Length: 300
Picture 1 (cartoon, one colour):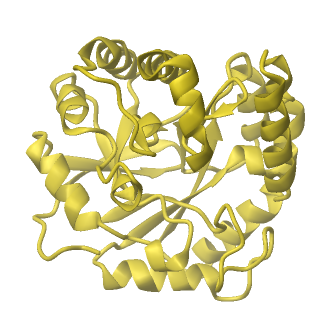
Picture 2: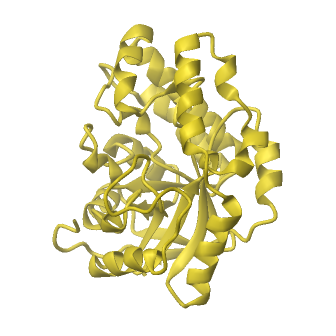
């Protein structure tokens, strides 16, 4: 089995060919499956963002209000207001329907981490039959670190300090043990801004926390489609995860059917270069180890 355990059914912005937010046309998931199969990927794990679901509002709260920068707070409030219009129940039903029709899909969720919300988030999700949960850090306070508009804030607070703040949150997420997999563990590099010098002092606490919590990290092709033009996580960080015994999943972070399974060959090559020989699949929060295939072709 070759898997892609990070896919979304909606892009973040209106896109030709994509349905409106919250709309799931008949056969839409089937298109993801067909594209993935054409790329040699035989199992798909869907992972919609928690923060996009209206049910998340009471548990995630209005975290942006606590940021001291009113400009960032206002931007985040506008963004979340625009994005938060999905029904978690409807999303779950759509994926479960695909499962019942025999499609090779798994029900997952991307849990967008906000400190202080772990218990309430887990209470919310406890009643759903998820196969796996992935966790991510997309914002530091009210600052969205991975959007193109993030560049001025990197300059304002300092690139190194921004990375320190990001990895502190990522490490806190890992240590919480609330998810099964860390998604794009160094997504702070997404728009191509990086500090000078090695990052081992930032990597080490994250690797230790991940290994101690007994969770996995995804190897994602998504960075190859972004300005950073590099797989998540960076080769040095991925090797450190392997040395610490942290297992992996494989991912594309697709937001459109055409992206399903994208770059899987590059992902497998990166995993093997870091020393991995196996990857994980999940069923009802239980994990199973599978051998990595030997890559062939370009996988795009």
